Image (tube, rainbow, N blue to C red; front, top):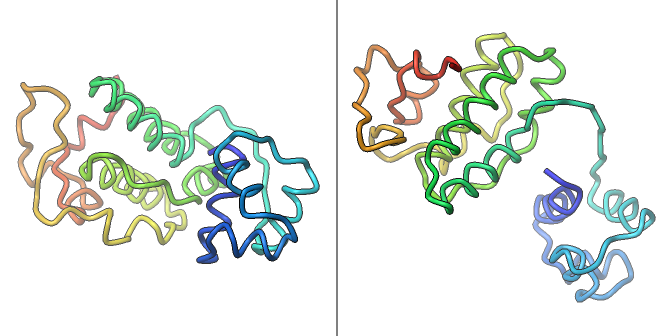
Length: 191
């Protein structure tokens, strides 16, 4: 998640449109649009005022692992390119990061709610991996993992290739089962 994503998320979490934020910052709606549209880089004082107005803070923590939002965006990029293997690799990398990093880092990597993916099964997968890995380490689970949009209406497998088999229900971790996503636990161990 980059700075522009953080700023947009801060605004939308308050339920404000661009005009409302502009009014509170004493600027124009078009200035907000240019920043969110990446046509203009915000000045540092603009970023600070934006965050104060929306009651948000930025915490910087160095990490070599992608967070949930970066993972969701990488998955979407891969899916839009027709590369399901790369999407799967992004999910596995995120899962691996949550399995090995320091507890505080895990919580931070999972803290911000990622946008829904272009395919609902992948939206459920990011939530399930987050829930599974954090619960396994007895760490706090962010609320976003249980949002309705992250639960499939019926059980279905995560399709990576035409040769994938649907796993047996006994082989599916509970965090995936609760989201109606059929992924075998063994497949989630990075090769």
